[in-house]
Image 1 (spheres, rainbow, N blue to C red):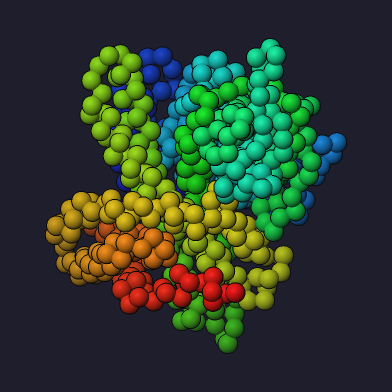
Image 2 (cartoon, rainbow, N blue to C red; image 1 turned 120 degrees about the vertical axis):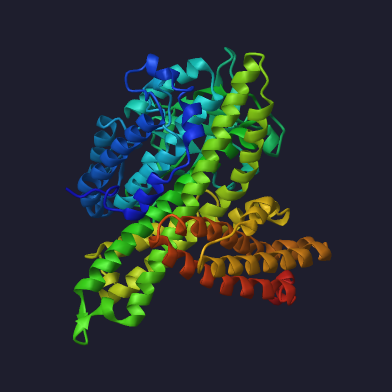
Length: 573
């Protein structure tokens, strides 16, 4: 029986080398939950075994049940009947199967029917589901909605909504964007007002809403009359009742199994989540950061599927008297794909673990404060993890989504003309990949989000510590190349800072962010190469290529090659 967990050596490598001891102890309240819940682990080894069993189950469902239905889901799509969305058959069946397997509340507390797992384990499940069917991930990955209610809602809201998410009885939607407010969420206009009885009601239109037909909706709305920026926005939760009309389903290039809807709210009753005016500046930013990590995992899953298809085709297709996998130009493409996949996976799970540290140390600090105990240490660790996660989350979304597009492009190229035909899965995978560097913030917005911490050299001490280490044998040569990338970055950064020109800084942002990413991933791979000889090749190929790219990006900055871009308005007029 196929299994997307046990058949992926690199995913197993990352699972076997997780550094989650502290996080799991926090998640499990120092394993005191074992005295309350039969399924709670008694120690770290027990927890890891639980995670392995659940991921094995998820991998089996993904490979054996979801993947075989993906092509039909793509053809069938969803349909709108009487203002309600009817899912493609395979999507409905897959959601039912995942619900029966108790995989719909992975990170939610056991109190509400969840598995109480760390985010890192959830992201592994998302990668496998995405490899099977990227459009299903858009529904499965909306568990962040439940997590937002868990984190910022009141206890009554948790008891009302979370068990339904955990059981799979309800799906949800992040209802943020509007016809005139895409990425600029400060421009949201949908009105929230209190009626005579003190009930909040929602009135207006939302567009491009993933799974807008969901049962439970998290809605960003303008609660402060007369306001025009993000400080006038609050977050609300409501049910999709007769006052919510699905006006249309968008016709999209890919991810056809995921309904993208336009919604009309007609005085819909809703509940305020958290405090007024914090909707965008706190709650939605937290929600979107979680969604961006999920999209990075989705992109990786699509790319893994594309690579598997390319390898399978290249080993079967014969040209010029041999299988095309033996042609050097094709073999080189496949090797590049594998290096990209493994370096991307290293980045993804490093980021996921930082997100876990941020969340769990933040929760521990809050608990200590409530008990009147000192929270200084937990608070400081939460602060550090928050800063690192704020840099790495947009970075991973940017890097992995752009890479997924390159991998699917090359995988289709290896198929030749056959790949352009719908008979082959790579045609669908190529279409599905294209949205990953658009939604939940385009790649350009991710660069903007990461550029501030990069310009401040947030990870400077981390890189200095890595440079100070001694690496054995030929790995020392790779370490020297990373040191050169570091010098190129610092020289480039110095030029940007010295110019004190906001326009130049914005144009140089991509080059600086790219070089920072090369450093972070390069050192991850260097560490992994010391514990697994299989990673030596990956580290070498990645770092050598990264140095060449870093030289090019540094030259663009230090060679003052951006004048034309800064004055593009004149050139393009």
